[in-house]
Length: 281
Image (cartoon, rainbow, N blue to C red; front, side):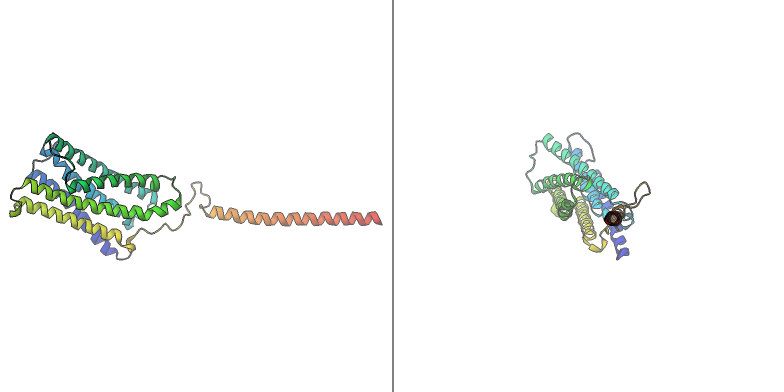
């Protein structure tokens, strides 16, 4: 890998910033809000920012760059697909729970749903993420889609994944700002909670920038597998080589058969000539 040291520095920074972001979200709801609960009150709403930062931001970011980790390049591509899909599934579950929490809170307090730009972008991101996850399973994980289809859809899959990640970060920033505007009557005076949550927003932006940088560098892309020659379980020839050897052996066999048939025909012709000569003598 080129610039291996830089990659490790960026990866360590991203993990640290992402983890601190999750901690900040927990500190926010426990120190400045009512904590966590599931009773239709503010404590239930607080699950929304915590789970979004934890799942939709942090875990999704790790899922995006999991293919870039050089020590996983020796692992099979199928294993890495399962890890990538598993992380995205966890992020999706946490996002759905967070959506249930906020809708339940709004309904219990008779607060209108889906009126802000934050809610529009957030719900759109959840829907697109669900579709992305389903198509990822159906096309890239299950062995039914033809290879040309996978090759054609892979750039779209990568681009849409990054686009959804950016949309999630944008929605998260709008959401925490919206919460502060509703909860704090003195937001403009920069009280401690506002400063703390603004720092959380900066951490989310830094985390997103690090993930996008690592994911967009071509020199850090997982190299293609050396070849498709996987050793057969019974100790036979690798796939591909077996086909090649079969074709070669078949070709040699065909040539041998042709030579044998020609020799047999020549001998039969000689015998017929000899018999014909004897009959005319």
